[in-house]
Length: 359
Image (cartoon, rainbow, N blue to C red; front, side, top):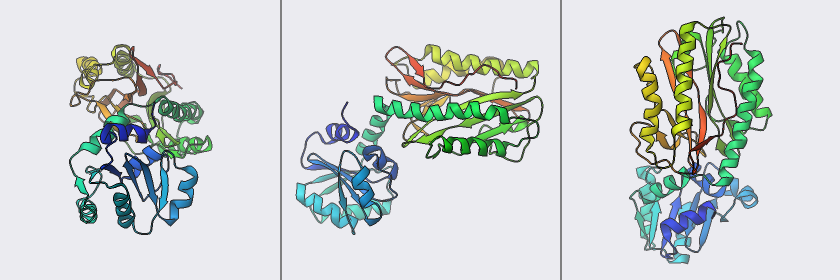
């Protein structure tokens, strides 16, 4: 498979020497060049790609950036215009979803003076979105490596779940462990919710303590080499009631049904319906969020397992399968894996057990 820059050039520019694409947003710059920096720009032309970095990042970029030529600058617009003149560029595609109106106007004013028109439709944004939806084998390996840290963190935290421990203490221990295992950071603000807090699907870890009979929902993920992982497991501290067990088994049934039935070509909205129909049958109104979202260079990517997303599933997509039931002021249950869509169906990238644990 061609590298990310070559794929973008082939689809959007197609060898036309008069066209270029300006990748300005931080996340997309890193996606294409593997180099993290808070500022700069990537200009992709038919003749090559240029990563423009100021003094703070220039030296490091020369060592680390891939698939591009690194150029230093003191004035970004001036450096871009020099490249426009050098290549005789007449059209420059911009990331309209990522740029402010003010920044777009600055580029327009600068480029027009050098005979180049800014293309302000969604061509570049759509091209990047479509490309990032399909993960390369190398990207899948990076996501799996990130998930391996998350799986290890789940096993690590189980002995810490004891009477009186707080949600915040558990979240901190998980984050500390992930960083010791090599994670750059956590993939998002970790969620640890015990007892009645579990009914809040995005609860913030607090001083709330764990007690006998509580469900503890842990939504965790690591960031490694630019790629994210995302996993949720719900465990019980002590024995649970028959009602709690039924809720857990219903969520697990919905989760496993998706793994069993998803396949290439199936619209994402239909995948959402697989899990939703199971939950709504016995617990109507308790599953209020979408079934899942793409994961990769960002924690929330395209596409979505949602009733609103008709995107067909395709091999190479990595999407979460995270049904849940939330009983207000009582408890919540969510089980989440990352699924890689394959030619035959899907493969879970998540190795942690899902059967109910009563610790």
